[in-house]
Length: 157
DNA sequence: GCCAACGTTGGC
DNA sequence: GCCAACGTTGGC
Image 1: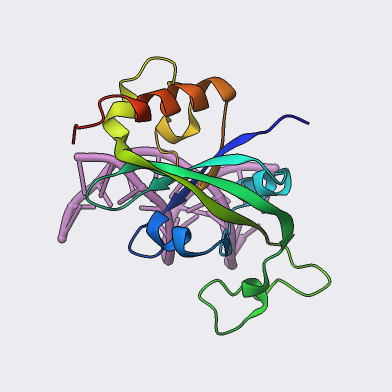
Image 2: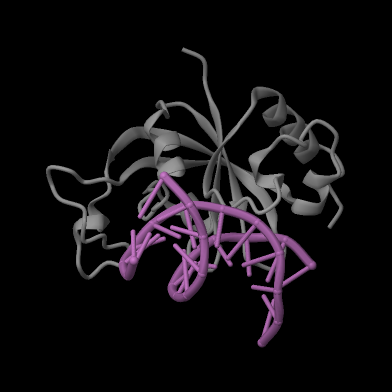
């Protein structure tokens, strides 16, 4: 089975790559069916970009690894959680999550503008007009292009 | 803060 | 099943 590649969006004020570096986490709180379905196909060892949205420097800041396949998102059952879903039950939890761990921090943020202007990345869901998917697939080619970007122009920003 | 784009809800 | 209204996302 080949490794698959993904992109995880997060608002760094809520949860940043630095937070993830401290310890692995469950990716709870995803309440979008498309994003959930992607998580349900993830395998241990899959790689992901970590993307900071809604912040001063928007872009990809590093990489993560899937360390546990999908299982029920318990926050959907917790009335006190921000992510509570009254339609979720133990029998039909509706929502799922995976566990992810820190893998690397890029020496600089690969900004959204840079991603938009780099040939070969046009098809990334992230760059499509109006795209709001918080968990999305990345092709092997796109993965390589972005990783290569992270290794050069080290001093810029 | 603005607002375009999106997904969901609910009336019909 | 349609679609208007609404709440949310997220770049700018």
